[in-house]
Structure formats: structure tokens, C-alpha cells
Image 1 (cartoon, rainbow, N blue to C red):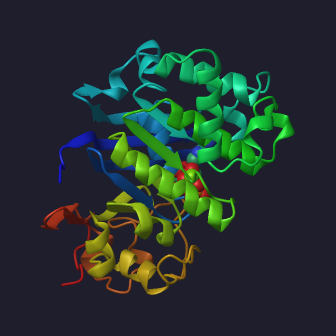
Image 2: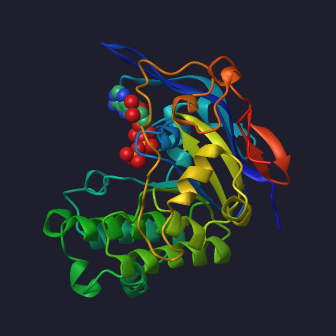
Length: 322
Ligand SMILES: Nc1ncnc2c1ncn2[C@@H]1O[C@H](COP(=O)(O)OP(=O)(O)OP(=O)(O)O)[C@@H](O)[C@H]1O
Ligand SMILES: [Mg+2]
């Protein structure tokens, strides 16, 4: 299996400069994305998953700012590119499916116009071939009545339908890297499953590297090759999906998995007491220590480094599971 990284995030630091103070949300995040594989990025709400994606694509909104680090994609640091250079990459090389689908569609163009625009450029299709390919894409994301939906405007669609149109648009770009941020949250379980299977199929047939951001261990177990677990702005553990489920080493991952629903049963459950800390008053040392069952004195003093504990298995904990 090819494991050379397509994207390597190094020491990423993203702060929010608010009137209440500086929120150091990402303060040295490291993450590597093996080529042609699907990485699941998991973590509780507020752990910084979306901020990570937005930072890498330079799409952070104020008062957020990337204050340091690198995101090396195909030998180029995405964080050093100008807006124009990045625009050329976004959509072609890198596509993102956002948490809020409606805001990403053009309200003034029909579904068909938006989709055929992309397919014309990306696949060089024309005329009836173009229309057929667009309808086919809508069918693949399980949009009911795809033919008729071609002439619909986004405001005529439900949120779930907009979500599927956005997924169809992102996939039509055939990017090398696809970042899907909670792409199927809110859709019904059968459709979620169908879309996740489609993503997996495309990862294989189109050599597409993907990051699937989700709360859902079921989805992650089903389609991801690797999983990175995020807590309060840091990666606390990353491993192959099998290793992570079989032998989790970080107390946070262990806690999450202890309350995991059955495999294939898509539901998220977070039953570790407490919550992700407020970024204005972060705990010292390991950010997880106030909630940790294995906590010792050193944990509040020294931030544990992400350390290799096996092939492709990294853990940031002083007292990781043996
Ligand atoms: N626009 C903003 N202004 C101020 N702080 C922000 C802003 N966006 C994000 N943050 C901070 O960054 C933290 C992480 O946010 P992020 O959206 O990345 O969480 P997430 O892991 O994607 O959560 P969810 O699963 O709910 O989508 C938030 O808890 C918040 O403190
Ligand atoms: Mg998010």
C-alpha cells in the first residue's frame, strides 16, 4: 500500500483574535495524509476539525488567522500561496465539501448550470453528453428525480438535497484531495451510507485522497483507511483504522471507543465526563489531563509529543495504554 503523504501539515498554529482574548485553537498541529487513502478526522464538537480544514485552504474567517506552520501539498506550502495561486488549486486539485451546503451553492444558477459548468471544464464534455453526465452524477449522490432537479435553483431544494448537489459538484471536479466536513450529517442513514460508499469507490477508481471529518465512528470504521483523533486543537492519536479500533493507546480514544455503538450502526456517542476546554483558559500541559483517567503530576506540566508507538501509529500521551 502506498503511504507517501499527499499533504503534510506541520506545526500548524491558528489563533482567533477575539475581543475576549486570543484563542489558541491550533497550537502546533501535525498531520500527514497518505496518498490515495481515506483519513477520518474525528473529535468532539469544538475540537478544531473544521478550523484545521479551513486553515489549510486559507479559508478562515476573521478573527481567525494562521500564525505559523506549513501545509505541504505536492511539494508546495499551501500556506505560502497567494489567493490567486490557491484559487487555481481549489476546485481543481483540492475540493472541499463544507458543513453548511447552502452557502456554497450559487443561488442564481440552477443545479444543472452549476454542474455542467464544472463538467464542461473538467471533462471537456459538450451537448447531450454533458447533460447526461450531470444527471448521472446527481443519481450517484442519490438525488431523487435527478432529471427534473437539473432546472431547480438551490432555494427550491431541501438542505439535504443541497448537500447532495454540493457533493456532486465537488466530485465532478475530480480533485486529487477531497476534504469532506460532516458531508452527510443530517442525511438519512441509507443515503449517508450510499454517499460514503461512493466516496470510497472514487478514492479507489480516481486515486483521490480524502479527509472525512466526522463525529461518527461507524462511518469512520466503514470507509476510512486511517483515523486521526483530535482533542482541543491537537491530534492525540493517529493510526490505521484497524489498529485504532483494535488497540487504541490514548486514554481519550479508549474512552471514546468504550462508548462506541456497534460497527456499521451510525450514531455518535460521546460519554467521557466533562467537555472540550474553553480555548481562552486552556489547561496547562496535556490539554486532556483534567478529564483523563490516567492523569499524573507530569501531565499538567509537560505537553506530550506525538510519538510513534508502532508502524503508522502515533500517540501523544505520557501514560498511554501499553
Ligand atoms: N469564527 C470564530 N470565532 C471565534 N472562535 C472560533 C471561530 N471559529 C472557530 N472558533 C473556535 O475554534 C474552536 C474549534 O472550532 P471548529 O469549528 O474547528 O470545531 P469542530 O471540531 O469542527 O466542531 P464541530 O464538530 O462542532 O463542527 C471553536 O470551539 C471555537 O472556540
Ligand atoms: Mg466542524
